[in-house]
Every structure is written in structure tokens, then in C-alpha cells.
Image 1 (tube, one colour):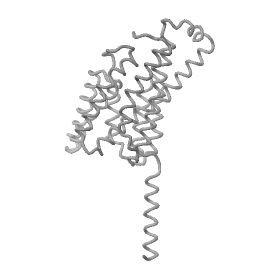
Image 2 (cartoon, helix red, strand yellow):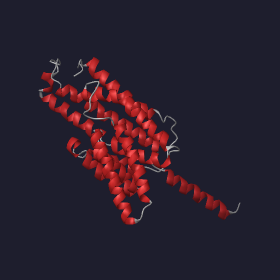
Image 3 (spheres, one colour):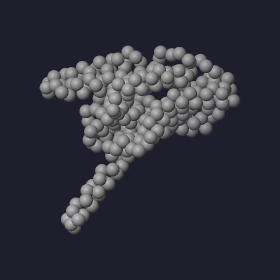
Image 4 (cartoon, one colour):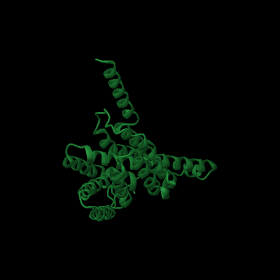
Length: 272
């Protein structure tokens, strides 16, 4: 091997190392999972303790004392830290759509966990076994998968037709999500569409997460969804080596049920 060839291979390895720097897909999944758990501790457990007016008589004086303000600020902090989760999951959906071996199996998997998660979601969010007020996030992602297929077909059209078709697909997907009362309805579909069109570049996905994440979370957590732009900025395009693919699916219904049971049996809040 000549010195020039050796130098070329060294440069190639260095370039590969630079490309691999940052957060891979598995790391993003763990960040989203932890962020979601933090958010749901605030929403499913802590907010119920503050706003529930049943038999928690011993807790009410605490909540109306000066310490109560600190508790409320703690809840707001949990909710703000948790708002990064959904935009990251939307981005991962797009990555899955682009790289999965079978989109059909991917869609079936999303629907399976959507139906599996519905009762834990209802118990955690609505405190009832059955509720049509909201549907869990897997339904949103399943609609998003259909939207992605429509956007892919639209990309192959001529410029003017492409924009019209893409707009129609996004509007139709948003209306379907709104009709189904999915957790993030139209905003979630716009996030998924933005990541499909602009997520291929660092600037594009960071801007999409920052702008739409901020707008999606403005009313609830003062725009804290913008935090999702940070891990997505550092995404390196690698899938990661984690083999616990189904962990991220099972975690959603499992942690919702666990938080509901914690609220029910540790704090005595009955079903509504």
C-alpha cells in the first residue's frame, strides 16, 4: 500500500467518523420516550392531584398553601420538558416510512398498538374505560403514514400539480385526524408533512421542529415543543444499533397503565 493510498483511507475513515457523530435513531427514540414519560407524569398524575376535588381532603390544604404554587410550577416544568417527545416521534415516523422493509407491516403495527393502547390511554387521560374525547397518538401516526404515502405520490408530479396534490393530501389527512379526534389532530399531520419535505437536511428538520413544535405547544406549555429542535439538530442519519424495536411500542400503553394505577391505588382517585 502506498503512502498516498494509506492517507486516502485514513481520510475516508475520518470522514465516516465525522458523519457518524451525533445522535442516531435509537438515541432519538430514548430521548422521546423519556420526554414522554416526564410529560405524562405531569399530566396523568400531578395535574390530577391538583385539580381533583374528591376524597383527597388532606392534600387540598397543601395545594392552597404557598407550597402549592411551587407544586404548580413543578407541574408546568414537567409538561414543558415533555413537549419535545411528539415532534421527535413524528420525525421518526418519517424515517421509518423511508427506510422500513415493509410499509404494510409498519402500518399494521401502528394500528395494532393504536387499538391496544386505547384503554390505557382512556384510563390515564379521561379516567374512564371508554371515551371518544381523544384518541391516542398511534392513531395520529397511522393517519400520518397514509399522508406520507400520498406525499410520496405527489412528489412525482409536475411542479404545479405537485404542490396542489401535496396540499390536498395534507388537508385531507388533517381533516381525518380532526374527525378521529387524534391527540394532536391537524398540527401533528403538518409536522409529519414538514419532516417529509424538509427533514432530509439538518437545517430543514431543525426549522420544522422549532417552528411547528413551538406553535403546537404554545397554549399548553408556552411553546416548549421548540426543545425538540435540539436533539433533531444533532441527528446523524444513522439508525442505531439498538435491537429493542418493540420496546418503544410497548412502552406507550405500559407506562400509561402504570401511571393510571399509581394514581388510582396510591392516591385513591376512583374512575370518573
